[in-house]
Image (cartoon, one colour):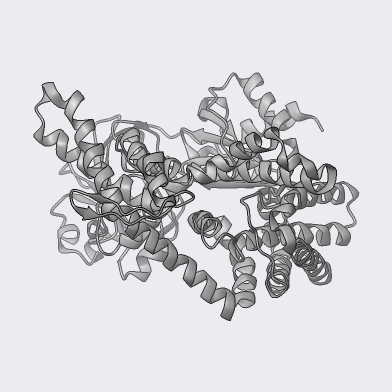
Length: 615
């Protein structure tokens, strides 16, 4: 494959090197941050030989390349002298989330986001330690049983166990970072629960008290939830002391006060409550395991490809860590992740067996091996199974069957590890149950995909990239939809033209663009409205929906910054139309001229597309 040509074609169809702010990569995707997303021709890039798919999310335009990633990425950077960002860890990258005010409506999401962000830094450590424990287990089992009594084994075991034993400290760091507090205060307060003074008294079963209050003798090594509570209290304690301590003394007293309050509450309240909550979560999973376990594992494995595509799979990470800590094994989530990866690989093998294209077959086999051996599923999901539609049915069938079988046979992960066949030793004496589930997942997904086939009716004609410039006096359609007269808008403020004359649009697209060349003079934080001052001095207001300010930004994704120079047709806001319509909001979108009394001559009826000239 000519990697230089592929790199050139990608950059050309993405709007040219001048349209790229920065570029980075993960294990499977080149990730571009673009100046103008509308210049990128997604369909043309998807048709390039070697490209497995294109995804736009979190402000990044991602080109999925799989095995061709590194040489193409190097060619992109070298040939076009682009600004690089640090590579992204494949399983942990999530778009940054802006802080939102706490409300009862978003409480569940905020708590879940907090827990997920806190546990994210912990996962690589647990996997690293878990895989080292696997290696030591293999040595003792198959090479030298006496190695277990050596000092080398004990020291290496200490390294492998460290991420588990010091879990509270690592979680406290992640949680404090998420909240925006000083991580070291939360880490110190969590570390106190592991200090020898405390653990020695717990081991000796001695009674303890602090300020005359009884301190429960509990073990906090490998605990998760106490650290989450500790970080939360440390954050607010630090804020409190920063308010009341005079500036000259803050460097000395704020830290002392924070760890004194948080550490004391950790022994008295936070640790015991967290320990109790952790036990409750473990009991819930044990209940599911003993009642509907096989069905639950099968259904979760069948739905996981859709959760991965929505980014919701990361919400399961905290439960994996908690289950490994207590009750000491994971019989649901880790088996589900592995079964899903195997089903993705099996479906791709079904496509390989069905296709008559030798080059495509070879590529499919390579992608399937990546799923099964390395646990990298993005090329399979976006490049093959979702791209050709029907294989997703095979993935779900394989996940359901494999998950049910693995659970019925009692598969349990006792150590954290990757979701691939190299991590099978983490299942210890239940490894045969997991192997059986894996084989069932691969075989079922492969057979189902082979039988139902896949959609090959794809447009293979590569089109030229869309790069359209507009004159400064041109006003363009801000989105795709149907134009209506402003007087017909069901909001008196707009229909009476109190704010100015203009037009309105019934949206048929999630992207709202700039109506002209100019400056983004106003960008409401909620994303429901923005103002553009054109290069010719016109002031334009775009208001998305009616009364949508009440949503406080929910369902709106701002793609540009206030003060930024923008071009006609450049995406400014992305909305979740389906979600907003479900909430009952009228998404009629207005384009208003706010600083002119002249009659505006624009197209006011009919269907329009993004960027279509209206004057």
